[in-house]
Image 1 (cartoon, protein in one colour):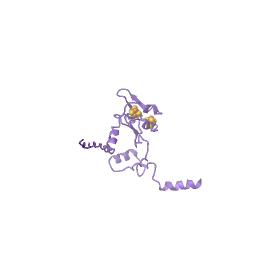
Image 2 (spheres, rainbow, N blue to C red; image 1 turned 180 degrees about the horizontal axis):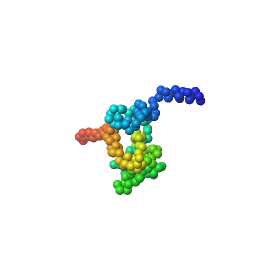
Image 3 (tube, rainbow, N blue to C red; image 1 turned 120 degrees about the vertical axis):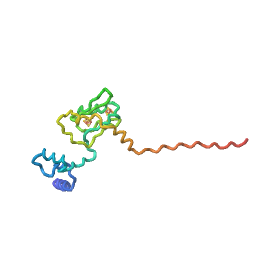
Image 4 (cartoon, protein in one colour; image 1 turned 90 degrees about the vertical axis):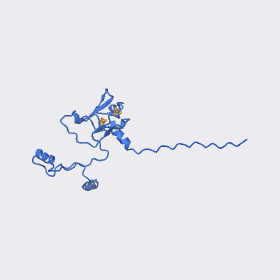
Length: 166
Ligand code: SF4
Ligand code: SF4
């Protein structure tokens, strides 16, 4: 048990960090002043660490590809998704989302996906930044990137043998 914990601790020393470092090199005396310096390009921020593969961040929704079947609404455990009868589309209230990704699995058109975006702190929980209504037509873009299948060859017509004179 102790040996396992020791090796785990040792492994952590050589692993990439999993959490973001403080965005500035040193804690500033005045945050507002420090942000002004960042805006002016006098100070640079520590970049955030990369999210791991399969990370479940803010939902993205391809509104154009959606057929309005409402399957996502049925599986969502937290009533994040609302049906818009006019146009038969949906919208997402991200303040309610539990990031379970069930909606992405059930959608027959694959038009919901989880993005890498995790910074969603907002004063207005139902404001425009916390609402997902249309994230662009990315399903069509993905299809265009897929390698085209070669067309099957057409069977050549059989040549008729010349008839022998009787
Ligand atoms: S990720 Fe889960 S909680 Fe969030 S909208 Fe989809 S089903 Fe609902
Ligand atoms: S499951 Fe997909 S296609 Fe059906 S309403 Fe939800 S987003 Fe649209």
